[in-house]
Picture (tube, rainbow, N blue to C red):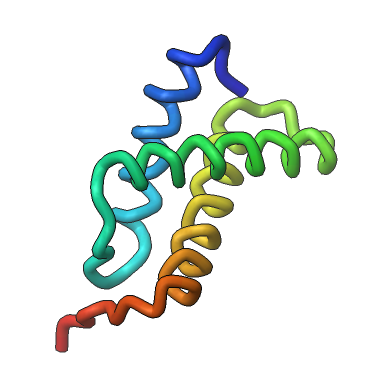
Length: 87
């Protein structure tokens, strides 16, 4: 999905931040975990997009962000941290 390690770090940061933005509630994780979440989401999203035959760059990003959101939910379930929901 990205070219080189630096591309995955920068792209992972963007995908991680977008995943945290689109998932409702406060997420108790730092920047390093956000970047790692985004990198794993980018790798998983790129793999899934390749399996589905998706070649559109925008759709690959969308799939990577969705994968990162799912990973974020799994992270919250595994760590058992409560998320404060407004309302």
